[in-house]
Amino acid sequence: MKPLLSTLHDSNSLQTLGRASLQIVHDLKNQLNGLKLYATFLRKRMEKGTPPPDEMETVNKLIAGLDRAAADLSTLMDYGRPVELRKQSQIDLQKIMRGVAATFTEPARATGALTGALVIEGDQSPLIGEFDPAALTDAFRSISIGALKLSKRAEENGILRVSLKDEAQKSVLIEWHDVNGADHDPFQSFAGSVEIRMSLAAKIIEAHGGAATQQETTLRVSLPLTN
Image (cartoon, rainbow, N blue to C red):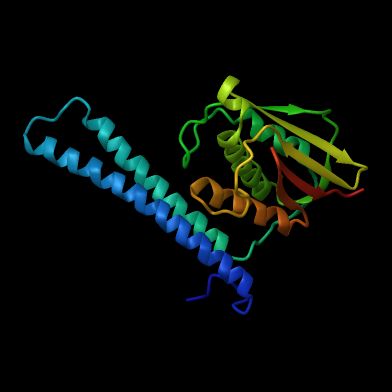
């Protein structure tokens, strides 16, 4: 069996993974407790011999909970592995980010239906670089979901502002605005399912030579461009 991390001597990586494991296991424990309550309720109702009208709803909740638990475990395993990118040349980050925004109101398998929309600000000039489009699509989506959950204005009007800025054709700065100033960095906290996905997203961005940070009420991602 191969270790989750290729460099076991990297104590910082092991400590980070350890913290992530503790937090996600705690979150999974809460989810499983909820599943137990639903299962107990269903069993008691079925023992009466007359299936209730809300039986399907209860079963659906059970399935959804199991899906969330499985997705969290998969994310934790992905975080523990070294990032393997499949970069392609001439990839436009503008298209990737706008593609994420266009599908943002569609149901997400691991998170349920999204409530809100992304509004992309700035011009639509191409932002070309050498990237793994599939990996960055997942990363941008995870950050957007997290930003929406932390958003101030999303609570008011269901809209999250995202801006794309070309930094002198050398790098791009993507910003998710008006997030609540939390007492923890969502890219490093591992406080639950959303944060572990955001931490994995940050790891993918760093593997591209970029960075993911929080500065007060803004989440920021920078990535290098090619001339």
